[in-house]
Amino acid sequence: MQNKELELDALEELREAGDYARLAKALPKHWDDQNSLDVDTMRMRMLAAEIYGREGRLEQMADALEPYLGNLDNIPFGYAPRALILASIYHNRDGDGEKALRLASTARTVAEARADESTAAEAILAEGKAFWSLNRWEESVKRYEEAIALYSAQSRSYRLGLAYMSLGGVLARVGKVEDARTALERAIRIMLKFRDEFSLAVARVDIVLALNAMGEYETSLKYLQFAQEAFDQIGHETYRLMTLTKTAEVLLLLKDYDRAQTYISRALEMAMASMSSGISSLYDVKGRLSIARSEFEKAEKALRTAVDLAEQAGSHIQRAEARRSLGKLYLAQNRPAEAATILRDGIDDAIHIHARLLELEMKALLSEAIYGTAPVEACKLISEVESESEDRNLPELKKVSQAARRQIDSLDHEHYFIISDARMPTLAEARVAMLKWLWARALYRAKGNAREAAEQLDVTPTYIRKLTKLIPRDLLRPGRKRPKRRRSSAASV
Image (cartoon, rainbow, N blue to C red; front, side):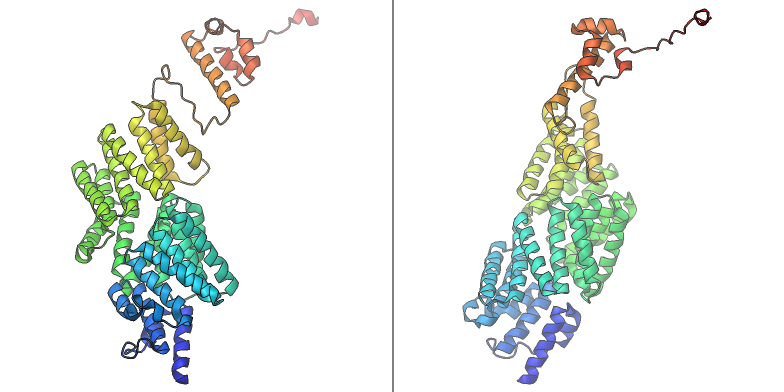
């Protein structure tokens, strides 16, 4: 019995160090032959369930947890938190986020009642993952930050890396890409010290969203290549498909369309074989590639499929992304009314899940779609986008907003005078801008004659200059400057 306990303790040490490859090999093959309520058997079953869960093998994970999933009340109190956490992870990956959250919260309560800080930290991390699956991302961030604080205090470096990885993933989704990149780079540095190739590869995939938003496509591609090698060796089908899709997206951003098509074809073959839930994102990338190649009919077919698949999967984020791409297609085809309709639906989805960057991108596209019929609304939308992206490294978002701004600026300003809230935050500055604009227009009508322009405004140029003190003198007196009179040389004599 003592030897068995020592063996189990050694397995637990491998788990704590993140060496799941050695743990899987060292786990006894007949761990499921004995009484499931025996403490040692329970510990081995929980280790086996965790290994299967990481590999995406939900059926085997359910088999390992079968004696406990419907019988949690009979588990010894000391092992209840760990069993509840694993049950939470299982239900979370099986699509039942509400049940996962209840189980994780119960595990935390029991662990804290036992003053088991180690297990409590893992329960808090499980709570964060459940909140993430429920699109309650702000609460998810709070849980991850709590877990990070606990793991740091406990000096559990490997678990700290997992917490930073989770935090970075959710921060990228809510649009805080700079913070997401910092957290994920920290997670990658920590994971490089351990032997958990799977978690390291996941962190490399998660950081791509932040890097793409910041325009660092080459770095994204390198991370994805490392991740693809790891997932191919591990044989994790879900992440293999996700990595192929994200690689195709990065190649599309790099305008390497032929290679992007190759990765899309590989991903489609894999998706058809596995019937993965992430196939909507793949069709979205396929549609965007067709837009880039001006193959609009193919693009619309692919993007309509992406929307339908996202609705079947109940994924708000995938549906919002597909609607974003469909709005771009309609704008490229000069179909602004249809673009506005689909983009408004996409914005509602993005707001629902707090995907801020995606929301801003669609608002910029919407302003481009409606600027001709609703210039005031278009200006409000683009002002919101500009104010949030002004001091941030978001080249893709800025590219979209600049295109929309050019469309708004092309309006006949004789009929529309637009002041951006982002550029004119105070009433005083707006008043100055109005006076400058009125003076410039009056000068234009008066063909550069300042006196006639002043008469049109029923003021004098000197009055305007004194009032604003901001209008350049050459704008007040346009035209060729008169040379200064020189004193007569006779006067000096």
